[in-house]
Image (cartoon, rainbow, N blue to C red; front, side, top):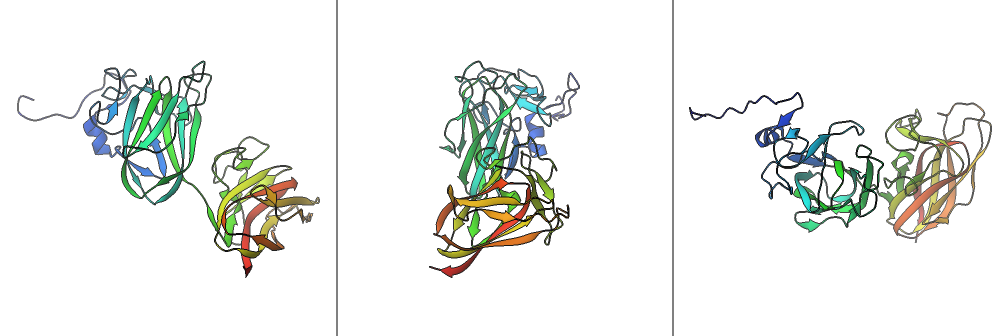
Length: 338
């Protein structure tokens, strides 16, 4: 620096990348898009007490950033880094940009190897106000085993904001924060089967097998496949007895509806399912006759007439009583307004 210039190049002491605040700004890491995934280690550039709050000086893990936040390598899904060695009342700020006003679901991927529930409490703030209630990080069997804490249907307004992750009780590691749109449908209208809720198993769906067998569109246990039905897109497939799918909706007009279901039954056996609103069966059993063609991309439309629906918020569940069955979509058609 004797000639008045600053050389930003540096040689890390190891092959593990270490970046400083100037590089963070240059890489644009300090801006995060919502919906999307925010890596915990990509908090804002700046000083302790402004961009973050860390109780001890220096980066305990010694990698990725040159400040006081403790960052380590993670063996979690997709690898990368984690913020670790957290203590009570440490926090991280993230400049974010929300693309669209609406409701969002938030998942925070954490490791919590504690022996009791005292450790691992956190919450989110937005622009200095509480965004979520206190969230508990699920217990895991080790520091490199991760699980997710969830907050659902959180309202966000479009534009630039500052998001704060506050660790109320430490002892956890944080991998990432994920924001997804909370899906709700307007009725009359069509609901694609694969757009069931995002509240997870036993809340938005029930599936008897582990993982998405075909691997398309969603990353949970519901089996979603591509369909060659009219309009293309996806279908929920391999649905078996007692599996169900839940959809949040807003009924915009009271009246009498016809409800159409686009379904496929390729084998010889009949399938039976029904539709519920808010836990009440509104259709009775619906039978789908087996085609015997073993072509699961041959779809038929089954119509249930004279379903009375009152306007307002509603949760619908497609419940399969006797399987197997593929479903492409269901559609609500207002026949007679009240």
